[in-house]
Length: 258
Image (tube, helix red, strand yellow):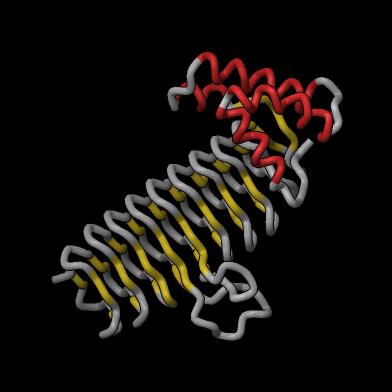
């Protein structure tokens, strides 16, 4: 049986695994599901059609699964889905999706989400990401695996941030950031590869060399984007990392940072 503080309010229809812990004055809505090993701190509000996976550590004063901040929202039963083994710190706000898009906001697994982070409706966040304090995603944004968003980073609606990207403090993202790149500024501009992060994650010397060549073609030779894509095609055929870069550029609807 779940451990629920006497001051917490848990709807009878909420589904909590046996070893879930709910802290003082927390409110759990009727459509909420929480899997084994997850702990929720004091004064949290988890509502909406929200599913939270296993072994998450959710701190005090968060708001998860509240209605999207979208004027088109008319009370539809949209969802928030959170994976396993995440840390979600104080005062974070994650909204459900909208029927105009996916209808679900998604946070993957093994993410480290610091205080005051906002994840808006229909966003997709991968695995192993780090969001520093006050990072915010507008609606429909996508964040790839292992990305790190510096404090106060703001991501505009519909923007994509690729895997293994790192942004500096107070970065403002108006266009897509290709994978493996470091970016900062207002608006964000590229500042080389995230070399240290890639080394820590075990990328081979061959992969790093291929990405270095790709970055030079994309950003330092004065090529147009079409020219860069053509020059990168042979590298993409031989290196999965460059192929990932090319695939990302091909689906970058807002264009990439330059």
